[in-house]
Image (cartoon, rainbow, N blue to C red; front, side, top):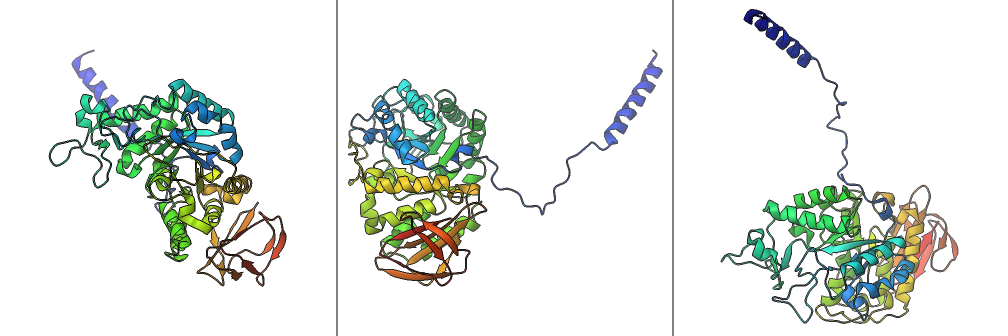
Length: 463
């Protein structure tokens, strides 16, 4: 073929390609910019829809303070009605600048290791396997923001750490966390290392997700990517120790309801009226997506160690606060020892085992968790029903609300005061025939019904 023929053939071929390119390729139907978009992009594990969560402090959970000893109590935790076990950090604890004799579990020396104080890796795997066999799930407490001073990372990769004004490694600013130093997430190699560590415990040990310490101190785009990589292994559950809507979009199933806890504590102690609770529930309904889980609690490791026991915090109003934490919107948390009526502030840096016993608080939680499991209105996130305020004639003292769907209905009335209150109700679909959950009494509630409640008492009416 001569040059002229080749040139003609090339031109013809080029024109054919251009013509093909001009043909409209099939496209997806255009979505109107006015169509509502789902803010939450992640999918909750299906098993979390009516779950409650149990925080386990391995060091104080038993006299031995080991995974093996804790595993012996798994049947009791299961019988309590909880589903997700949150293990406080299980890693080796730093020795340099350690606080107390045993140190803080939040001062991590090795992200791939197990604290020998608690047992071996095989002991941890056995604990996870036993929990799974009973239909429960295990999440690990993960400390991504900082490490112990003697974590080998700070020798091998000093560029992974933040520096103070004088060039030294620094603890988290403004806090008395002298036993740790902060990581620098502007470094991509650190991000890759931490992601690999998080994947290891899910892939090789079988854990089901994480509770992430001070999650808001770590960049959100890191968490968003981590969630995708973990979900590629298996569906995980992620809890953030933080309180902001953005964490729910792609990274976390649940955030702390700090504002709720502060509000109910203030109400019970007379520091504020019910308006603080109304503000929380208003923000929960209007500013957060319905898929967002919020964790409601009356105690946890921080509150118990540094502030007060559940009895010191709520006094005679404790049961009322617990009831609201379960029948109101949110996934309820129980911190180990609450169910035994633990009367002390557990030491944080020393051995201080819980004294286990039967207690009415445990009975109350067990009964409430059974109701949460059975009644679909009390389920978590989009699976549950929105709380509707029921207006009553004692709005500064009595909280009343209804949660209802096509299948179930709950009408709750809680006297959050130290005086007897009588109330009638209006402005919500509260009327109907009910069984009061705790007494078993069958009642008919109408617009003319007036209920009298003793100080700090509560009624939970169920259809």
